[in-house]
Image: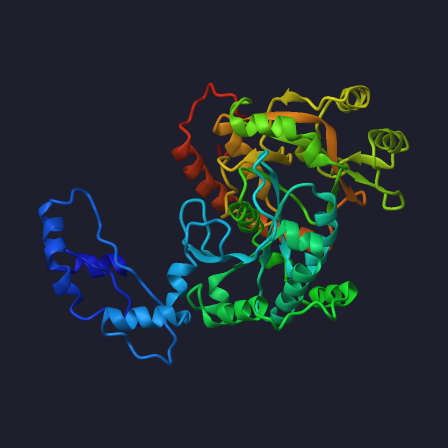
Length: 461
């Protein structure tokens, strides 16, 4: 529709407008001198941008700049669009991501709740990029306790989650470590509200959490947890790659680790790998990601706080490599015995290069902010992380497996649940169309080279 409105124009100057917005008085007349320069080529290849505002509906339209200034000074909603779309990564801001080759349409409210700690100058911290629906937000308590650096948490907002947002705000305000370390970003599907991203529901939610109505006098974690758990989200609607990306985009550091809410990291994980991550961010390791080993363990066992206990549990078959019981090709990392031997006998954390040999492999890793983002058109639980791992190969990245550090998921998984199978099967029904679209993107961005080191992906790429 935008294009046809332009194609139907009989002039050489176009402004695409919205039916519901109003323009300042004599808009076209006032800019005529500039537009004539534009059409004559005096400004080069350029577009002329005009400022846009939103305002409280109770106010009259400002017919001059003096009234405009008065309304801005009153700090009403007139100034939302500009104030909340700043380039400061630590300030609250609302962004609408429009659909393109890799991004799916969605809204984000960055720093809906901001961490209180200041930026660390001595080294580049690793942001633990977490994501979930709001009913898993209670896991932030353990994450804030175990993670030595900062956390960026993207939470999926689903209609009817008002009580969950207030509980989340109370948890953030009243739990010292969460308040210090964690910044929280809201993500939602714009079609749920059928309104612009900066809408009344979001404004009112922010007024509640940023005002004085939330206090810590009656803070009781179990009560907050109970409220959070009541705000459930259907698994099939959870846009996992959007959530991974927004946890990264909300990060204020140059190092990212996308994590799961239910897994735990080995003690002092971020501290132990700091020497390697500083090399990574400085470019000393080239284009690379730092892979860490993942395990799952018998729920009857306690979390292994050191490598000696890890070795004991492996020997007892109480701890195994992550998901090797039902999807080995996707998660297996070779040379476990050598990894254990080195890590037990040496203090220095180092790495081993591992060749990317098949498109199904989907390790987890530390990356820089310049590393490509997840492909957002992937169905949840159907190749969603594999798309990124394959793109890294095509982009010339190396996979470096770190010694010493690990993470663990409690419970040994031998098969998918009925719900997971249902969601996965739905993803498979879309596979041909999704892969065809992904192939167009990946081959367009990274030229096809039959002699390249990356494997083919079935019959698609």
